[in-house]
Length: 212
Ligand code: FES
Ligand code: FES
Image (tube, rainbow, N blue to C red; front, side, top):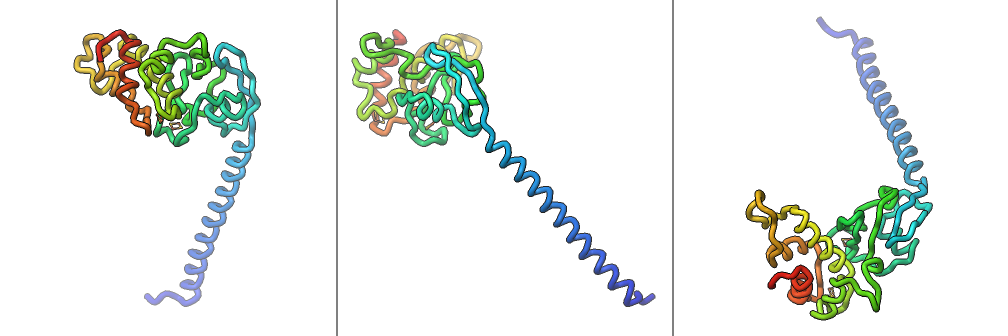
């Protein structure tokens, strides 16, 4: 049976108007989501944490990384910004004793945490044993990666002592030994463009008390 001309037109119109309605609804929803996103991005939050034993309270844009909070707001410039993408380890700090890439975490996520930067590990005249070993073994050249290397290596030894396995741990049923293979693997996220790796390893193994 032939379709009446008027009915076909009205079907077409119906389809067009439905599509337009869906598009409009989508656009409105997108705009609302964008507004909400804009709103949350523009918000700041007060955060309190401990940095190198001192209580700090900051009012920060929610998007501020822990790295930027340390460097730009607290002026602790020992922690370095290398890639700002979690690829180089230059920004490594300790949060409640665990190493973390501070460029990959938002400061407002660390309410109540205890943060240790290279400045908190030791100071000239009272160096942390790992800092002293890096000096002794010449574990740096330009020094840009060094704060991250030192913070990371301090945590690496604690990880091994806490029996946390790595990709090269042979037997998961026995405590991991502090070997140069374990140290190399665990330090692989800390890049040194000067290539001071062998001296860094010497420094860490001395502090660990094992042969390189
Ligand atoms: Fe954070 Fe490179 S600056 S990993
Ligand atoms: Fe220069 Fe490591 S000492 S990047």
